[in-house]
Length: 192
Image 1: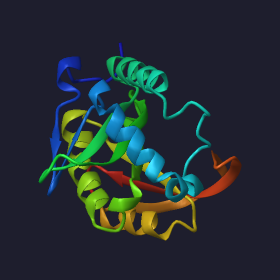
Image 2: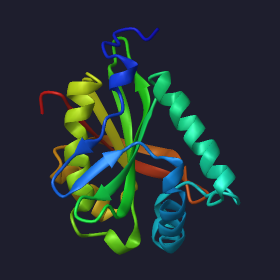
Image 3: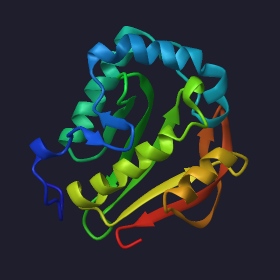
C-alpha cells in the first residue's frame, strides 16, 4: 500500500476535460489512430523522445503498452492519457504522469507529446492546464515535475505558460534520440 495515498483506485483515471480538449486512458480501440499519428509525426518527435523500439508501432507492442499502463495505474506508479480534440474526437497527442512518489515526496514527473499536424496550436497548453487539477485534486500530489532539452523552445514556452517554474539544469539527464542529453528542470507546486 502506498504511503499517503488517499484516493481509491476506481477514481484514478477519469476523463479529464479542458478547453477544447479532453484526456482519457488509452484503449485498444485507439491503436489505429495512435500508430498513424505517431508514424506521421516520427521526424517531428524523434529529436525529443527516447529511441523508438523497432516494433513500437505494432499492435502487439501497443497491447503490451496498455497492459503496462494498466498495471502502473493499479499500483499508483503512473497515469497515461491520450489527448483528443473535443470538437471531433481527433487524437492530438498524449500526456503521461510517471514516477509517482508518495510518502514525504507526493510528486510525479510529467511527459507529453503532440502530433506534428497539431503542434503550435495551443492543444498541449490546454491539455497540461487540464491535467494539473487532476494531479493536485484527484491524485492529491504536492508537486509535478517536467524536464525538457534546452533547445526545445516550444516545450519551454509550454511549461512556463502553464505555471511551471524553472528549478535547475541536469547534465545528461535522459537518453533522448540515442544520446544522453542535458535537460532544464521545471516543477509546479500545489500552491503555485
